[in-house]
Length: 485
Image (tube, rainbow, N blue to C red; front, top):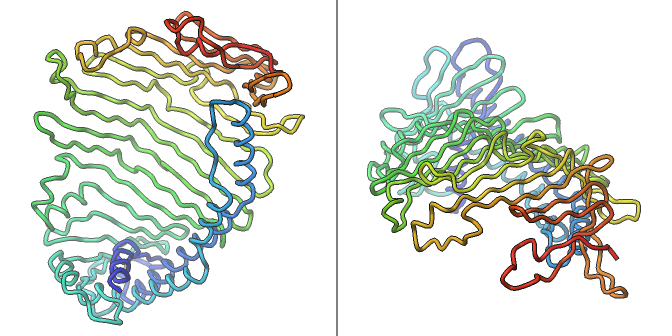
């Protein structure tokens, strides 16, 4: 029962859900309890039911099979498979209806009987009611005595929940911690959505009040807001999303230097949509500019005092799966709207550009060609350019930088062709001795390293090759254009 009590206490901290308040009057305990309990249980049941439906989509199995066939045609370069079969069944088992119903009932009872009660009301003023949470109430489900350590922690933390009427059947519940009433999180219940907003500054303030010693290990700068949101679009249609509402910035003091992390506003950052009735699932990612900075710790005197900086312009894509779907499209694949790079001090060491001249994004479609074999198409093109400028690292003898990477440019481009460029796997043929390859069905494939390049024309295959000599065993020396038979 100890784990059960801990689970209930954790859920209580994030499940204060309410809606339906009228005018600017403070909501009474019964209204908060009724709405918190019913909306929490509804959300748990609805999301679980939709997830169970879409996790069993046979379409995902078909996609896994298509990817396996595609990879098998290019011997020596296996492509990753997607979860299917037993994994899908295991995922579906996580959303057992009876078990979820029992959890929802228990949560409802806990919120009504132990959290939002008249006895826990500390004050009501203007349009807000404050509940004081007591260890003897929330550290037990009422079936056995409360754990003494839990009671002591809750009472010492002076936990409160402020329920504020937002009008239009909406309510906000803020968790208040300590004598200074730090506000690390707020739960907002709107007519169609439930959201949990965590404020990093408020979280730091709460830790400082609860445990001053532990607070010393927190970043010296800790700001930004993140949100977890559940939106109801229909009885079996739910969207779970996470966002960065206010840019994140963390700075942690290290010996003689600082580790820093920042990520710009992204709404939403990730979103998963499950429509049980339509048997459709959709996932999207849209990370904005993100940067990590940390100190150089090597032995080279000329590099000491400099910082490594990894700057990512972003990452984005979206994918959708529907029952009986035959074509799979990954849309808006990209690495942001600018260059991604790695620097040491003022020296740029590595740079990456994706589709720099064609919108920096592309779509990829996995379908089947006229012969039934998997076909990979891209729109408008795939053009990846990587540049290495590693000469500054030669100051550190431990780095052992190959001469080829002191100043090198590599490029992989698939472009052109009617309807856009496309590839398919060409399977091995024991009768002819063909070992398998990657066929350019439409367009042209270019792979280059500085002034050397391999070009594969439409209808031809990218196949393996033997280097002319061991001294010239570069990447391109192992690849060539060849027949697909």
